[in-house]
Image (tube, one colour):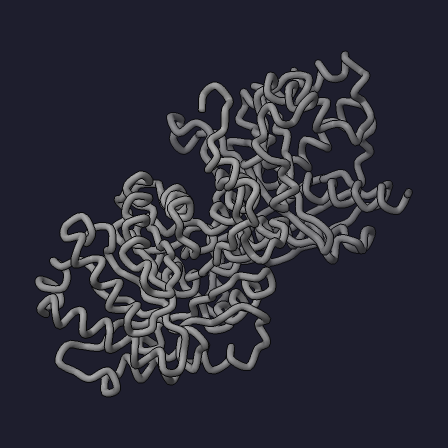
Length: 545
């Protein structure tokens, strides 16, 4: 193979029709078990609808026996037209010494009225005998009778819990549990790496054994991996290569402990990197970045900047040598075109930057031929970063910096003074509030106003926009989205410099600004005034076109 000669099997793989790989999403059930993750009923409905829009094959809605929210979810979602996407209810096998028809869990699954039911059963002999306290024969009966009962009204997906641990301990019995489900009518047998500790080569070997051991049944084999070894995506791909035709996971990999296989990366790799597979009916992957961020926002979680394919830093370039190469040939430091997954390239500016970074970021200012100005900007960036500034997430402040250094900056207002009164208690509500008093100059006219807020920065933000809104009505649609504070030099204690990053937005876009000072209010004021100036310059440019 190293000589460049392909085997016949490799050639046939790339010439045959792409094999469909079903995507099974369990964000609403397994994902919600992650620390800090909680979905309201409306959240679950909204995410399910978004997953159906992009063509996810199976959407697991929850465990109807566990809580009323999941019961309400199944009742409401059945009213929706979800196209080809199928909603799944999740539950356990019947209890020991109880008929399936009498088991409360079985009844709850049937009452959910979903086209698919995902049934989880024990594969590991140790788990059956020492945790469930049942004989191995009774465990097989629990699997088979539950699958047969549920299969009367729905398609059954059997999740073989701890399959890889079970196969390692007792391979013959692990296969028998799969055959018990298959013989009872289960259509899918999903191998679960429940502890998340299996390696890709082991996953491939065991997946092939599971397929061989159930070949006499008309079933499809799937994979469900956890990320405790940082291998959930790799293990999922290894199982697919070994013959699995369904991958279970969650959006962004959220879930218990270290999480699940990240379906974002799974889908991107199968659709864009691997040959011979098809996901989501052949749809493109341009929706992945938006979907990832939608789920983060709905779950009230911070985006993972370094998340492959869709993270804000996934195609961000900082080193001057890298950017120089990217400008000539993007593939030198990018494994795919970011647009394929709905992401975008970002060129970062810092003390590590070269002239190439400045040129790339400042293209819209049409100053790329002014080498003296390029060097001046780079020198100023280095100076400011030594003081604690970082422009990676403060593109609007950097934009204003370029304007100032190129003598194209015209301020829309001149701050005269501000005063903050904080810590007073409102006797009527009992809440603590802050008040900002602001004096500005717009042209030759003085503007003076005051505003209250939940804290000093909120009051400053409200007061600044209130004082300027008479002169600049466009500020009415501007809002503060995020506010972050970081100590630059922790060794200086309470006298340390403070870096404030503010994200602002309007109905069209968001932008970041920065302020640095040993006074948190002064740093916040810098970032706030930059945010307003950027908005006003943006509006002026739009109106001049």
